Image 1: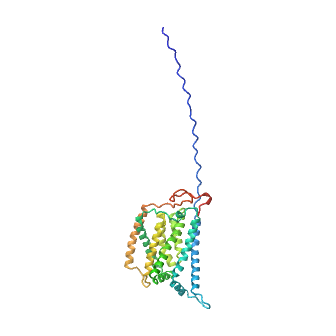
Image 2: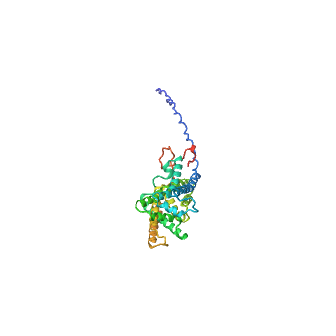
Image 3: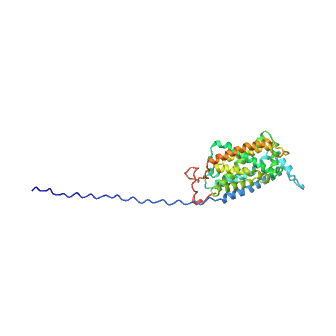
Length: 337
C-alpha cells in the first residue's frame, strides 16, 4: 500500500488589521440667527428729517430777511410777499430758498448710513441695477406718465397753483442764462439725489426687509409726499412717488430712480418756465404726451415683470463677501440702523 501524503492543514488566515474608525462627523454649531432689521430707526429718521429741514429753511429765510432789512423798526406788519420777491432777485436768493431743506435731509441720511454696521453703498442702494440698460427709456417714460397723472389730480382738486409753486414759477420766469442753469441744477439734480437717497434708499430698502413691498412702497411714498409740504404739490407728487418706489424696488438700486426723478423735475422746470396761469385744462399736445408716455409706462411694467425683483442686499462692514450678498450683521451691534 502506498502511503498517503500527510494532510497539511490550511494556513491560518492572517489577522485582519482593522483601521481605526474615523472620528465621528460633528456638525458645526448653527450660526446664530440675526435679529430682524430694525424698522423704527429708519421711520424715525425720515420722520425727523422733514420737520428739521423745514425748520432750517425757515431759519435761513429769516436770516435772509434780516440781511435785506425786512424787519424795519416801527413797522406794524411784514410784507412777506415783497420780501420773498426781493430774496429771489438776489444772486444767492434761489439757493437760500431751496438748498437748506435738501442739505438738512442729506446730512441726516448720510450720518445715519455712516453709523450703520452695514456697508455705506449697499445700505443706501448705490448698487448695480437688476434691470438691463435698455429698460431705462421705458422707466423714464413711465415717470413722465406718472407726473402727468399727478398734474391731472392737482387740476381736479385745485383751481390754481399753490404759493410755493407760484414762487417757483416766478423764479424760473425771472432768470435766464447762467442763472437759469444754476436754478435748473438746484431743482433737477440735487433734489433727486437727496430725496431718493433718503426715501427710496435708506427708508424703503429697510422696510422691504421686513414688510410686504406694497406696504413698504406706500410708506416711503407717504413720507416723500409729506416732504413737499404744500397740499396742491403733495397731491401732484403721489403718483410719481409710488412709481419711483416701484422702480427702486424692481431695480434693487437707486440710480434708475434718481434719473427718473431728474427727468420729471426737468419737465416740471420746462413747464413752469413756459407756464400760462390763465390757461386751464388739457391741450391736444398734453393728450398726445400722455398717450405716448402711457405706452412707455406699459412697456416698463412689462419689462419689470420679466425680471423678478432682487432682494434688498446689504453687506456688513468688514465682511469679506461681495456687496451683492446679504450676510447677517454682527450680533454685538444688533440689527443696525
